[in-house]
Amino acid sequence: MQVKCTKCSEPITLSDAIKSKKGRLSHIDCSRPSMLTTEESALLFAYCFGHPVAYCCDLHFRLAELAADAGGRENLCPRCRRDLNQSARAHLYGCAMLPSEVRLRAQAIREAAQHLVKESQQLRDRSDVLIREAEAALFEKQRALRKAMSKRTAS
Image (cartoon, rainbow, N blue to C red; front, side, top):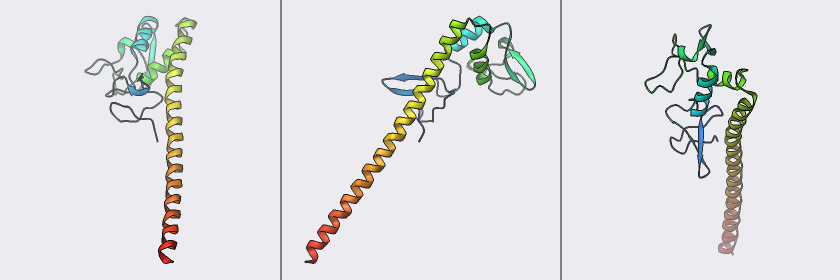
């Protein structure tokens, strides 16, 4: 079983922008789960505005060259309209123009979010195993009770 967003019930993937509230995970924006976070967008704008940040259709694109959707939050290929958020995100976490401290902190935040998703998945999987074990034990006890009751009524 996959971890699901508490708002839209869709699966949360490791590349989704997420938030945690009271121990529950959700997409920052359910209609755009892979969108860049506000912090990622700010870093791209501050440090990567002057050089290519995404690749598609055999071309490299600068941030200002990417097309936006109606909400202005997607980074789309101006030719094929493919979502390039993942390409821009990959660029951000490997960009040599970011000061190393900023890049390391950004990577640590992203890794923490991914770890949270993975850990939630592991806990969900473990709870699923425990539920199945409890169900099996309950079934076995019920079977034993029925067997004992049938012996008593047969005597």
